[in-house]
Length: 266
Image 1 (cartoon, helix red, strand yellow):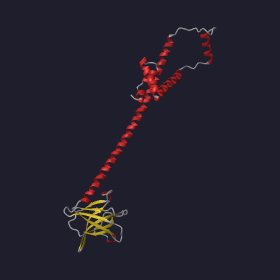
Image 2 (cartoon, helix red, strand yellow):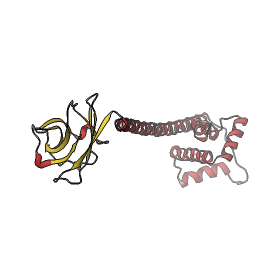
Image 3 (cartoon, helix red, strand yellow):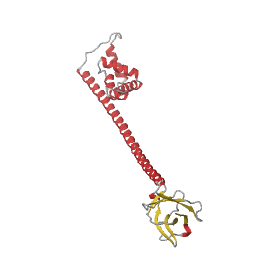
Image 4 (cartoon, rainbow, N blue to C red):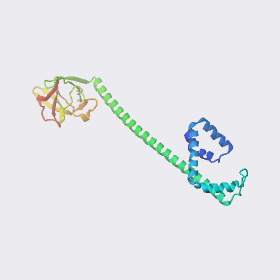
């Protein structure tokens, strides 16, 4: 049993009220000698009893006190005349004991409520931290899956890799196309493209060169590849080149050639 459990057990209140056996008293004294927290708690209980006693004790005037003293001492200050204890004093003693015990019980319940409040607060705090940890784990798992998907695309020997170089509107722009001719799947690595302006989106085109025939195979929207910049677009069966243009949000029916950012032959 640790010091907090020992304090909350109620044995210290019984110790202060003298309700323990000799063996139990020795145990409390030994615990108090070894643990400052228990010594402090005993002192607090004793002080509470003293304060409670003061609150229920009657106020005696100096004149009344002198009369009682004279009656008790008489003419000879060395001899104290003791009167037999009355039933009233017995009742008063029992009443005081009940008041003290009730006060101690009230203090104990107050301390117990405070401790329960602290425990509940710690439980809520731990739950919140656990929820955050779970969300972090889920995020890391999603990122790991996305990274693994990218690695699988890059390592797939069946993919034809087409590098799309920057055009006059964006000379430093670059992108890569991973095209599996067997499955017709197309992935776009857009890491080298600048961020699309507000209200605009990149659109991918599969091109036949003679005559020039562009076919839209998808938009590079942020929601579809927020972290890896690897986008899966529509499948294509035939393409002699790929190009990426910047178009109004939602895409265009035909490419805006003045906004051709990247282009590359298969």
